[in-house]
Image 1: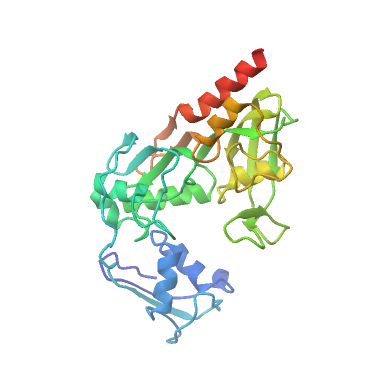
Image 2: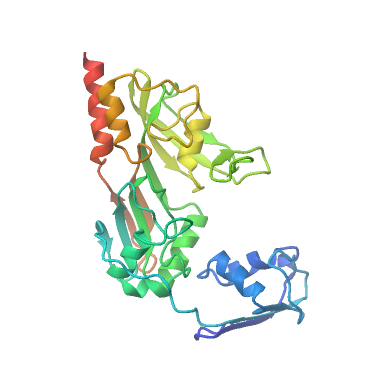
Length: 326
């Protein structure tokens, strides 16, 4: 197999026995880990990939001995326009950038949001990011929801992108969240292991799904404080599924405070008027990515970063402690 590292990249090889039955797009993703699955699928659809000289769909399952030819043209010029938005940079070198994202900021452009995202700010801060990873998500290897604050690592080089995506896939990246939830969590600590997939009736939401209908998801939790009808918990991710902490805790009967998407109908209203006003000021769930640890993609150093609890959640805890003290 040969891969040309030049701008116009090429691959020409035979499918080995261990790859028989694998989807074409997944097979390509293993060989071009710096390219997003979306871009690889577009390359297949545009005829840049052939199997035994014929065009195939991205979902085509390969057979042993088939010849796969790939030509990857240089990426088109980025359409994202850098925006000089302030960033809270925690760490930066030529390969990685760790930022502390505020609640309310969207990580990358998507449906209904074409400007003002973290990606737009990153491109203004480090223009070289435009050539790293996906065209619409340059440098992004993982994300935080709009309403979640906290630490996020961004790849500034192709070597970093490859290493960080592999670390995430192997579950070696350490991610610790702090959350305020409804209800008294009975166990002092424990784990929630339940598959997560798209909600069967609401495509905007995720949900715990039956075995075989969702992706493996594991969350470890520990109760830090209990306050009447609320609990302050620490959640550590073993996997990184969309909305994982929110979905898992809600499935256990403890939805996050301020999370209208996963709040249950049976969840009692916040009775204290001061606390209620503070919840309305959250700008999203009471969830904060407080600790992030990974291995530096180039020098191999173990790095760990911490972000203090933001005022939007600290004010809630102070009010709950004051109520408990009465």
